[in-house]
Image (cartoon, rainbow, N blue to C red; front, side, top):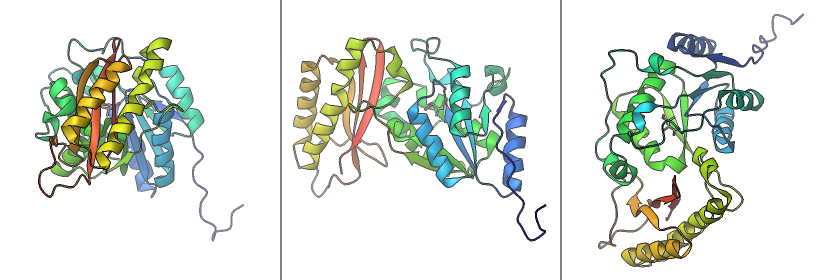
Length: 298
Ligand code: PAF
């Protein structure tokens, strides 16, 4: 019997799957009322070690860990891979259970977008470049669903990967602008041994395409190092494009050096502009698979 002076033992961890906003809200509110910090990791499933690294960060900072899996239709345009996007809730739930998550929120489309849904969240400026330019409507879909998820759960902290750096900045902006009381934490990109950034879409690559894909981070890292050493920006981007082509990567969506905060492309070194706080961003297609990555320059 614990003596009255001993603190109550924390409730044992029990992994649960919920599908309604009401159940999510009740679980998170209960933990927070008991003084536990709640971390939240929004995902679209097809979980891999990169997602687990977000969970590990939550485990460092919080006591309870919620992961959502929702393949959000509003962030895919009609010609994109919404239907083909990998879905395997059984695998994902097992991985989360083994990795120490407390709750999986896996709503149906009708729970997130009930009949009559008419609201969209858009973030200006940051979304006009990079993936925002090549995937019109994508960030409105992301911003809308993330706003909903954060308000539904009201966790203490939400975790997003830096691989989707533009998405991370868009989410930071909307949370500030809409006074959503959730701290946003970015987590460094997790990579395969050969440097390829982990992504749910990597599984679409054939073995030959996977070999080609390994050249992408190598070339990007080299170009970022050259820029950091003062190489001419336009020349370096042109050389990067040519080097990717030599490696068999000819379908380049964008290559851009951007300011990390505003995501504004930097075309040349204006007087006095240091490259501190800049990143090199790239999106390519290998076969039918679109890959993105970014590398901090300085
Ligand atoms: O990065 C993702 O998996 C998605 O864009 C997100 C943030 C879960 C919104 O659907």
